[in-house]
Image (cartoon, rainbow over all chains, first blue to last red):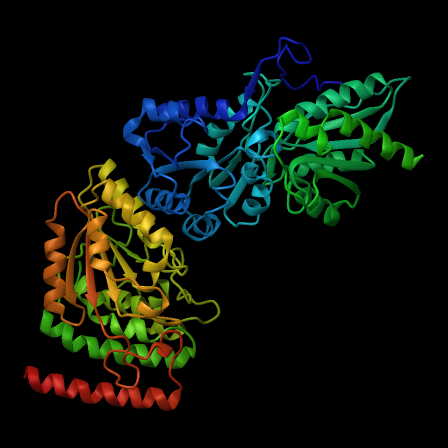
Length: 336
Length: 285
């Protein structure tokens, strides 16, 4: 059942639910951040409208810098601006930044301990028809391995709007993982979001007819709503699970993860990212030392994506609602 | 406030710095030799030529000029200069590259006062210097940004991305000083990856350029002075230097880029520098 303590959109699970990409929510939040804080400077590498920085550019042209297709320079210029007291927000498609400029981010930003907000848009298979070259499936691994870097993956457009505002105020650099494709806006203005906090969205229903299966799904980003839909349908079939929106990838919300590991028998991690080094790996690293528990990883298994519509790709690569339900049932069968 | 020396004093001081370099590199037994030896007059002229605004007692003074060392392997030279400028005690120099030392193998901003940015991987200092210059422009600040670069890093695509940006934004508060010593790890720059015509390349990207003898403090100081009064264009000072300067068996030998002398070589190098100093002193007196 939906967590009664979480402020969901009243339109959740209805056909009226708004569809919006997290990049759009980010773009709106960036303007709000620019209004609040005059030190914010935004940098982009020739994909300004695509990653929704054009709203900021139009509103604050004097604080927008167009770098051209030069992501390495963008990271260095951002570090230089940070050194003068600015708060740089720079971004591109994640395959280009942090894909192409990882070392500059490492040395100029992280080793220097300069604060920058890095926007990685167009992550995951949901990029769709552009194909594998443009689908970032490795960005979490790249960024979470860096000292002085934090990683957050908002689950919908509203969370993305809150995430950029939270990142500006967060004491340290933040990598913000965004999606191109629209997805249901299931959170609300009132729901809380913090860089270091994840949230329980679906609680296992327990009464005389149904008991908790012991399976908790940790999921982030574009796939969160799919996990919720799967949980709802499973509940109707008499299978009770938990769904946690693990938006806080680094730092992890350790208390929450430990709490749900202790309540559960099996964990499933679900992400639009390589299994190697992704969100699931962070949970596995933490739990293997603190509360060893069986973990099933749902993600991209050492392969690239391809062209296709977002939903087709999510299904083909086994990350959609049906694949989630199937995985839960398989686990239950293997346990019985 | 900043110490100031005359061009003549810098010429003499340069020999002392070279001796110091050999001594600390011998102590640590690793690092880079030829480049720092060749760039001594550049660093001395920048820090002590009377143009750089800084206060070693207040390294975070907001109105200071910024010095970005893009080629971090010049760390031993930078450290000697910073200690001479008063940022930290000269006794610290013996701890270069040692465990727990604030003198890291390549400069680390958070380890030592006076370092504006961590460096080591070459080719990204000019980006950061351009970012600082842009920040100064946004805030209408008058301080100047100096970026000390090597010529090897002119191979890097990142360098030219930054050159293009500085031209686009007409960053006249940015001065790049390129130590044109013609060597890099794998050999002579023109064999590894030809850079010439370097001056014309910078000019084509909208920069004003000047060429100087990198061992002539008077010329360097004059160029630095001119660079501050250039408008609408960033300035590149191409300083022609001799790698391994002052030690004949190191001069122009690219193998000395990434190695340091053993005790016998160091003894010989120090002997050469002593006789050079005697020669200069007799000429000056």
